Image (cartoon, rainbow, N blue to C red; front, top):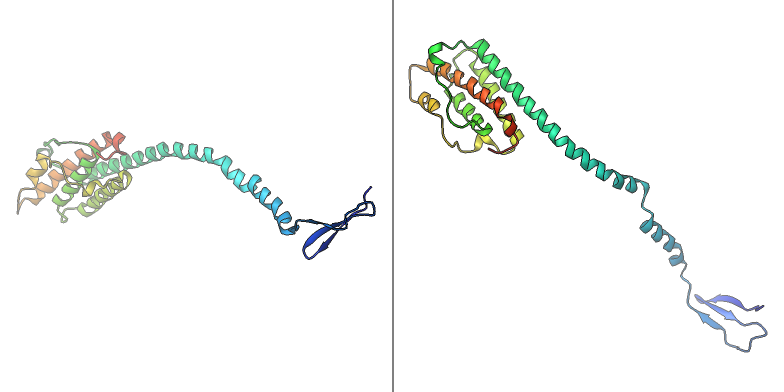
Length: 210
């Protein structure tokens, strides 16, 4: 068995032969960098052994995508129900607080009845209702709240879009009438009720910019 030894000198390791070897010159080995020996296991661990929290996060990603996809229809159903309730309550308040004579409730709404159009008609109608009329400010405030909520839900800002065509019944009420604001307000409230009923029938298109 060889009795040669290794000895470090000046950053190098030298092998000194035993008595049975003929060479008088020690064999020089490459310097041994201890820092590389210590760092290697750390690098391997970081590359092949991710932290437990990362593994847990990766395992939850498919489930999170499924939960998010499932929550979108649920959120839209909630929004439709919210709009339906707001419109229904507003119709009830108008019927309870505003007495509309039969001769002012004969006009039937015309034009398109997509969600955006109805919101635009409500905004036009609000400008035709006199603030001096009983419950006018309260009802106009609820009309504005409904329009604002629909704008927020649809994210296409129906209120700021150009009106394709103003219905003829609204055009008729927009004609200058310096004296008969009373009849204009009552006729407008009748149309608002009809527009709100149309809105409730078109909530399946609430998520579309139409």
